[in-house]
Length: 238
Image: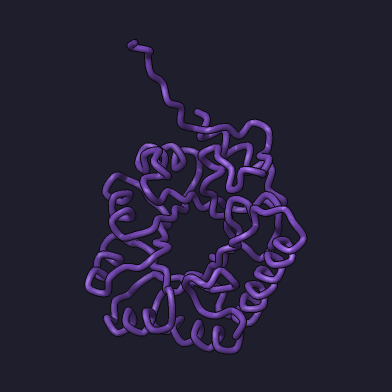
């Protein structure tokens, strides 16, 4: 299928070989999350990312195995389901981590780091504070790593390249500070980041929009062989 072809071509064009986390949020960008995830699972993908608990449970109940990371918020009162379905929860800030820890549930979790997008996450411009919080909550959760989003990695100008380099530098600084914790999944590379930037310390590439054959930015040129997965067909009735 074209989906598999896109995965293969993308993987072949990565600067360094590393595992793929397939982003299948929003019903796999409208392509059908179960159909997409099952094909990817058959072709060696063991990591998936979604936006909420409902999406994660839907994958689990339809036979999707491996790591499923919720990138967004899960209500505290629903936290027990994270354990029941073996789902990894993003810790979006310190207050949320504190409230989740108060449940005393054996949760798998990853911290979000804010390296410049200013949406969610610990402030990576304050590495001392980040390190302190990560170390504290590594005692409360099965902390499997942390992640950030390279928000302008798809834009090819000097200013955006410099901004992305700065994000990666902030991210790697915190990786080095907590290296003794041996967290397996630190990741910052998104679809664009994996192709046009590099971070050797990023264990995963979160492959989203390009997996489906679409460009993160309309000015991008994708590797040859990557094409849209979805086609619309109809007949002329009049």
